[in-house]
Length: 401
DNA sequence: TCTGGGGTCCTAGGACCC
DNA sequence: TCTGGGGTCCTAGGACCC
Picture 1 (spheres, rainbow, N blue to C red):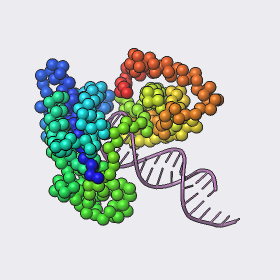
Picture 2: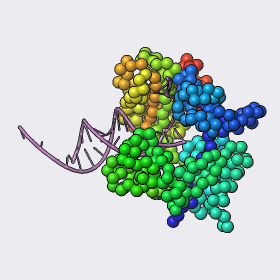
Picture 3: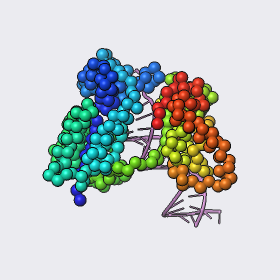
Picture 4: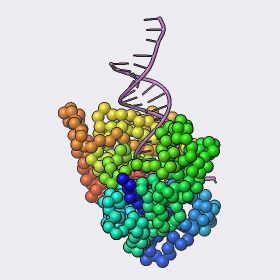
């Protein structure tokens, strides 16, 4: 049966939301109307463009590039810092509106939703009307704009919402694929990134249509599973469901780019332990245990190395994960100055699934109680106020959540 | 020029077992 | 002494997304 899918995409989300928040606070300048970007702190070496206004885009400024480049392209560019708790508020407000149309909504990211409208289009109305209504309501009620893609699967809906921006509704039904999608450069296809683009181009594939008309077997032979996927995408094939049920995380990680390159193992360890505390806190918030610990470093030359190890028993203990992380760091660290350090936990399982042996449980008890007390304080007084690495908090700001 | 942080998924090679 | 092949698990690294 044919499905009815919408993809709702907030236009320049971080920048628009920052603009709306400023106006709400009484500022008169709407930063959507000037050359502006949302960017990280350059002094902390986090100076990349996170979002841009459409005018900034006209200067050739790209998301993800260093702010330094953006300033070269547009010396008068105005830079604003990000605020994720504000973004979450607006993201939730959008979600609440969408919930009035269907409960089958997949929150694909903070600023994108897929909606499965199959069976939810009221009698006498059609999917396109609903899409326009959502577009209009969001603008009127929330003061920012969205693009809405209308199609019969997620891939086509997402491609459609990416057509002309901002504040537009686009359809991409099967019969429209040749005119609306095949004519686009192949790099515009979802999942074709900057590594696979040159490989495709070398094969003579310039447009999405070129890819669609290649033999499927050639793509599979050259790119394996990935080749099959993008070949299907180029032909508008995608049977993946809208995953509307909240999914448990498969891994939790935190990393930080250091304000300068660290070459002292003890100093790196201090940061590592602050990150471990953050990660295990989030783990316990989710009521999950982890069985794999992973430590990652990036050298001053931007080379990335990682080590991971599977533990005998899953755990959520700051001490256990911290000790493993320290061992992994020692194995990794060869004395090269470090630009970034990160910790991840993987192979997560629900707390209830754990069957601790009596011995292990007994050993765990003391540490568990300490973690519980600290978590309680963090929830009561805020994460940044309660941490065993207080001296780091002046230098590093960690995202909550 | 100077390059964030949070994820998911895939691949390849080695260890180990039958 | 010389020899197989398949399956699973583990680790490191990489591509892609927002």
